[in-house]
Length: 502
Image 1 (tube, rainbow, N blue to C red):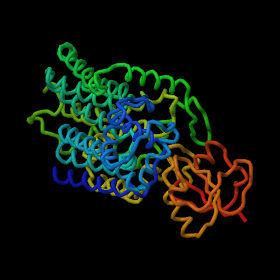
Image 2: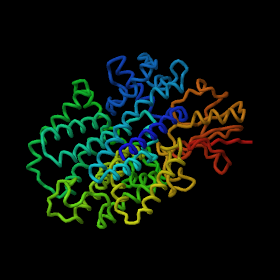
Image 3: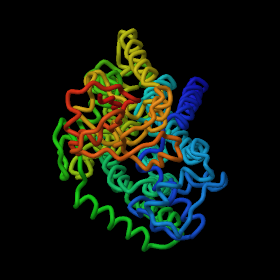
Image 4: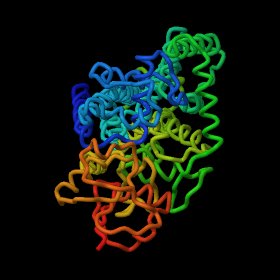
């Protein structure tokens, strides 16, 4: 099973790499790569410090070695526009900027496998790896130079380390957890809330309230966390505090979000539950919920009563209770992450709760092992993997069957349109021999450098003739170009409408 799980991880990494030159740079990627290049070349960190530096350093290292440049004399908007066009090697630079995220994908996948194997069984570890590495949201965001997959890696590693610490309350295991938590914080600041909330519910679910045993090693964990975070900021504190203050200000100010046709800046309490429900494979959700409803039937493959328990529960706890703990713990951790995110005003994509897919995969494995009729579990695996394979290179804009043929009616932003289809549009325009096009497409794109035909900026209230291309994001969120309503169009990728106006 170990080799099979490793094969799944490698297969998914190859699939991720296949997207690097298909999808154009998304909205946030130029910022993250530029910030990393600024750190390497200027030793300063002023580009959107609301995100911590570690993932950016990883993204920017291949970019730096490959010759991508950072020019401090450029205004920030010019730097963001030009960074992926260094030396006129756009596709090569996409590969250089995105390759580093494979490191975080590997960390996250191995952590999920180890957690499930240790808690459930060898088979459970394989199933959790399958569910995680074939989840379209995970695969899709692993192919981009953004902080969401690194945050997932940080949370997965932290929860694995916390489970080990609960099993044996030693200073060594406490420090390993603290280091993992510090790593998570350096990946994304949202982990400051996600990891403690998930760990708290794991502790409560285990029904083992030996808090006095945890207190001595707790301070070792706290010290390790602070040291790792401090080291991640080169033993300075002001950039970290500035980033936290900036993130709090952004959350207070809000951001334009879209849900079910409504546009707000203050968000919705049910935004993240809705995005998870629409953008996860339905099979993975069914399996995760089955970890609760079928726990009473026992977990197939769980250790027998006379074998060492994977959880630190007293021997007198009956098999029913132990199986329920195995099933509930990862599911509860995923729900805790969701609950922490729900009050946020930044409702701009399921990617902000991407870390919950790590415990959700372990919960799904527990649900699968609970089935008496194994063919049902096999059918759900096939549904899950089939949906992921069909999504192909459009993994991060994936929607499940509940969204139907028009997911843009439910969600926009980075859920569907993040500026990723500019290269595809270029190819379509070339195939159609288009000699002029009006553009209203999201993203930091240099149309001339990409090789577009003569073009002009499309106006919202000014009807145009000939070929025009418009992003779903701009149509839905900005209510753009009402004169296009009802006209026939061709879909380019998942996010662009191409019209020909007679």
